Image (cartoon, rainbow, N blue to C red; front, side):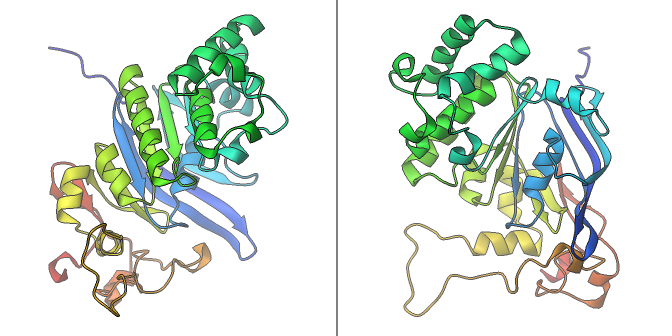
Length: 328
């Protein structure tokens, strides 16, 4: 019998506390999931739901003063409480991140050749000439035409789509085991979005990496990942295989997200506006003690405010935190 491989990434009861003008708040509350090599996982939710903070916690890039509790294990190594020097040995090497805005992720005063070469020299000990040669190959792989001639160009000399391709090349330079992509297509037009997503999927498949893709775009998630987590108020309110989750949409928040998405080709009724989720995402200091969606949810009852609902199993790997499923 084949030995079962442990997950590459195992997150258990992850909690992140932040200091605000209104005191310390819990920005991420009890998040947990696993990722095996080659797995793809999506994380969706409105702005302020805790998606990016979760990603930053995984990379050890939280703001000064943030407190992290729980467990983050990468290939069996505990990362919570890791000294900064050891984090520096992981970032850009065994784990890497593609950020939302490529023009701020790249340093404007350094050439792109220097920036792509930096992780190769730092983590793999390549010489300047070796790193330059490898940098050309990486840029060619991500679709930068005439890469050898453009190594000494600066970020402002490239388009937004090209800059995002360059940040992907930087992230993949050392062949990381885990790639985190935080809204990697937000700043791009629709055509470039599809090209960048396809590129990420191809590279993940080629290299056997695990991918955590963060997005607010349900269509992107539906076609890009095997499993999906829905976050709200720093909590995972629903999770499961992407196909099963989108077929059932069990949590009221998930249904609200789905109903509010624009649909290409849908008949437009004069005077009828796109459905929206009532209210706004509350500040972290104002989150209710029970279900974080209580109050905005049309099914809210008094019991929703009492405690965070326990996960309810709906199918293989599909769970939801809601006590009002029968009222849906």
